[in-house]
Structure formats: C-alpha cells, structure tokens
Image (tube, rainbow, N blue to C red; front, side, top):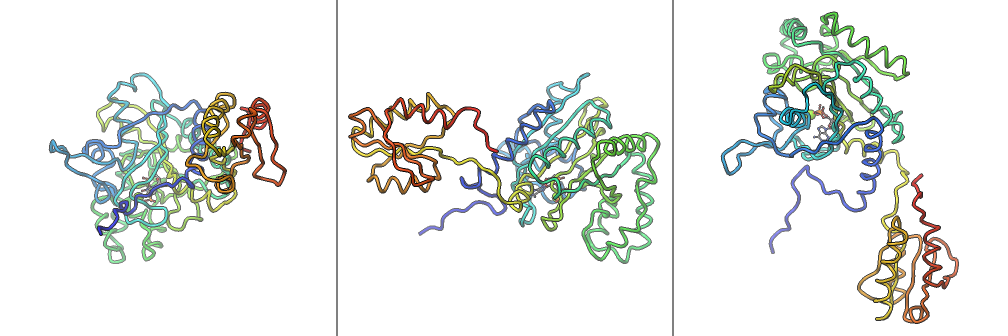
Length: 430
Ligand code: ATP
Ligand code: MG
C-alpha cells in the first residue's frame, strides 16, 4: 500500500480544537486596529522575485537562503512572500495610493521562509503586518508602540514582553558607522566565526545580530551606531523616546538591534520575551522611508511592524485558561422519522429567532442514549430532544447538559423564548 501523503515539513495544519484560540487572538487584533482607524489590505501570496531582492536586500538571510523561489510556466521567477512589507508597498505604489495621502494599513496571512523548522520557527507562518505611509513621525512611531502595548494588555501578556529600541540613522550615517565597524572587526578577525567573516564583506552590521556565544563579548565592545547619528536622526529618536516616557511605556535601548533587513532607517524596535527560548522576538519593525524610492516611488515616509502569530499563541498557551467559546451551544437530538423531519424545520426556526445561537442538529440516527453521549462530547449547554411523541403534541424536550436537572417539556414557542433569554445577542465572552 502506498504511504499516506503528509504535509510539508515546517508547514502546519491548524486543527478544529486549535482554531478557537486563533480566532480569539484574531478578533482582539482586528478590534484594536479598528479602534485606531487602521484599514485592512489584502495582498497576493506570490510576487515577482525581483520585488524581494530589491527591497529586502541581496545580502540578507531571507534573500540569500530562505526564499521559496520558482519559475512558473512562463519562465518568470516568482517567490512565495517571505514578509509583507514589500508587497504592501508595491500595491500602494501600483494603485497610486501614496500621492499626497497618508495611510494606516494592516494585513494578516501566511509568509514562507525555508528555515530549519523548530519551535517558534516554521516554513509557513502567520504574520500580522501593520504599515503606515506618508507620516514622518516620530508621533506615528509612538502610535504603533501604543497599538502593540494595548494588544499585549488585552491579551494578558504585557508582563511577558519587553520593548527594545534603537535608531539606525540614515544611509549616510550608517555608511560612516559601517567603516568604523569593519575596521573594528578587522582588528579582531581571528575571533570571528565563518558566518561573521563572510558578513564582514557583505553586511557587517549583521554581525551585531550574531547569536554566536564566542563573539558575544566582541560584539558588546563594538562601537555603537548611536554615536554617529546626525542631529535630525537624534531628534527623531529623542522625540520618540520622550513621548514613550511621558506615556509611561517602559523600553530598553539596545544598540545591537540592527534588524535583518536592509530597508530600515531611524527607528527600529522589537518586542522580546524570554519565554520562548531562542525564538524570543514576537514582534519587530521600524521606519523604512528610503524603501519607497528604492521601489520607484517619490520620496515619502513609511513605518510599520510585523508580529509572528505562532509565537504570540505560544505565549498565550503558556499563560493557560483563556475563555474560549464552545463551537456548539445547543445539540438537537431527533429519534423517529417524524421527529427527524420536524426537527429540521424547528432548527431553522430557532436559527431565525436566535441568530447568535450555535445549534448542531445530530444527523445519522441512533438511540436517545447514543445521541445524548454525542451531545455531551460537544460541550453544548443544552440538548433539545424530539421524539415522535413530542412532535405529535407540538412540544420539545429541553435538558441541561451541565447539571442534573430533569428534562423539561416545553411547547415549541416556550422553547424558543427560553433559548432567546439564554442566548441574547449581547452575550459576550468575559
Ligand atoms: P528571527 O530573528 O526570529 O529569525 P526575523 O528578524 O527573521 O526573526 P522578521 O522578518 O522581523 O523576523 O519577522 C517578524 C516576526 O515574524 C518575527 O519577530 C517572528 O515573530 C515572526 N517570524 C519570523 N520568521 C518566522 C518563522 N520562520 N516562523 C515563525 N515566525 C517567524
Ligand atoms: Mg529570520
């Protein structure tokens, strides 16, 4: 017999038991973004390879070794998006959204990177991306932090994550710093590992991001970019941090925070946790004004962040006890031919009358006992019971599945009124 086909390594199914947790987080995310006036944009999962090479940068981990790139049947080189920033900006430029306007946007969906799968690191993973355009900041940089801060609080995770900040200055400031850094590492070349040696020529700032324990001290003693910032970059950073101070949002300045991608300038930040081992960055972002010109647009402003939803959910799972709604509120049991027919009709009436109620009608027959067992398994609050006797009298049985109270017999109208009072539209998960 042939082996069963399995999913691709690093790409996971979300099974029905897990979806309520996803939906819980997704609803909170949507509500919070809505409360700040952000609008959703939906983007293709596949883009031209060139888009990512030009935006993310040729000598980044993503472009060098993580992209899912393939030739389509026309011979064009296409790539499954490894992140959303490039595609979002491509779409806004293509549709002329950036002419004298500002935008606050978000998107949500799968990203693809060919990495070594491990906890918190997958080959298909879900990101929430938030991008703003046309706003020079630092007030908008602050707004993004406020959104994330509110999200952590609403999810009960605020004490699990810490905010780290840095400024990457402008391209010109970075190139002065880059020379200093190269000459510093050149002097200590014999201590560098193979990856860092390669980066010394291609992308020396990335050495600061190295997790190699042997060079941790070397990195700690390296010159800091902050010392080479010009007045404009410094003022931007001061404006950003002093607003956070006034709002009482705690942060740490981490001069080694350089982010993996080439397109950042000025503000960069990460929200990190020590609960997820080495996959400790849950959310990351920053300002990328220059990317707009790099992709053919007019000089403009952009700042955004991306959040890894699997890492967010891992934190929620560690936390335990989240009030998730049941998939089924009421389970309908039908025994007998007439009851089966009448049950379908009555179930529609229930759904017309109490649209918020989640009613599952048992299909496939079976005894009362057997159907009650199935009802219990769904976690429903109540069973509605129809046998041919009830049908002939226009009645239904109602039995709580949460306590031992006796089954009641009600007219159909009484049963509808009962369900209405139990499942009023204002019912909330609390
Ligand atoms: P890391 O340093 O962990 O590789 P990154 O700098 O490559 O992260 P970004 O490109 O900034 O990550 O993506 C933003 C967020 O998306 C990360 O902070 C993380 O939460 C999530 N993320 C990135 N790569 C993966 C992955 N392979 N699997 C799951 N989540 C990921
Ligand atoms: Mg990475």
